[in-house]
Each structure stands twice: as structure tokens, then as C-alpha cells.
Image: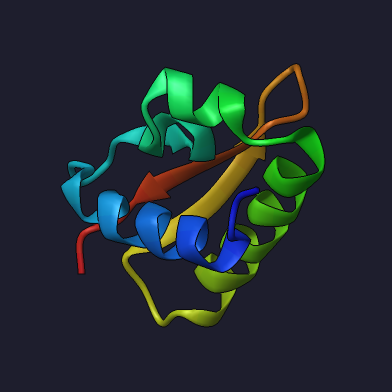
Length: 79
């Protein structure tokens, strides 16, 4: 079983490695095999928690439009 709060902390830490202006999805912050091992319900919760985190921080990351498959995209902005 996955601890979603731990996964959120991992995603936040990994987002530091994203270059300014780069567009990414939450799943890009995890190795593919790890992302696919996370149960769907936990991935959905993680997505909600990460989006809430992005909205509450004062800068650095910004949510942009969703993809055609309804996945939230993010970009890193220069502070």
C-alpha cells in the first residue's frame, strides 16, 4: 500500500529538477514503473493534493491547461 502523503513529498521534491518553462505532468515526476504500481484511486488523490499544493504556494509552479486525455499540466515559472 502506498502512502499518498509520502508520494506527494516525493513529487514536490522531484519538481525542483524541472527546468524553468518546462511543461510536465504529475506522472513525469515518477519513474514509469513506480507510477504504474500506484493504484488508480491513490493516483487521483495524489493529483488533487498536488494541484492544491501548486495553488497554495506563492510561486514556482503553475497549473496550466489539461491535456486531451484530461490530465492536468504544470509548468515551472522563474521566480
